[in-house]
Image 1 (cartoon, rainbow, N blue to C red):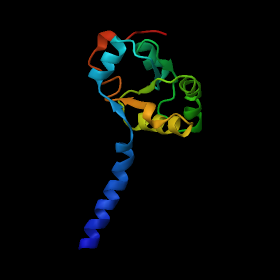
Image 2: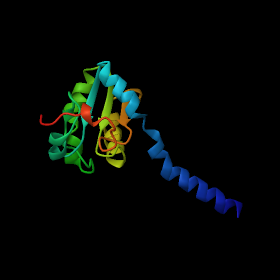
Image 3: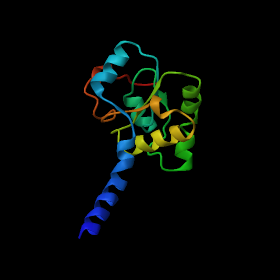
Length: 138
């Protein structure tokens, strides 16, 4: 019985660990960063139609969602280039801040962006409570 319980715990931790590995920024903190004009790279992975409806000023439109294929990941390369040329934090913005954001996070990390600089906007743009701060169009 002990072995069975241990196996289940190890299995569950193995599933949960990747989800816990990413760094998140809470909307209230991110709002302060935006208002203080903190130097950062905003990597928006929303589909282009959604980006044109709402995004943060200065975001890099990647159209990489859902970040599942090689083609999706390649769309992140311009953001990788900008992130490497910068010293600021890199904030990933996606529709809900979950699986696809984690996939983008992992790709940026694999391309040499230090994990200490990578963050995901908690709740994504759909969970952003300060809608008046979003812009439309390009």
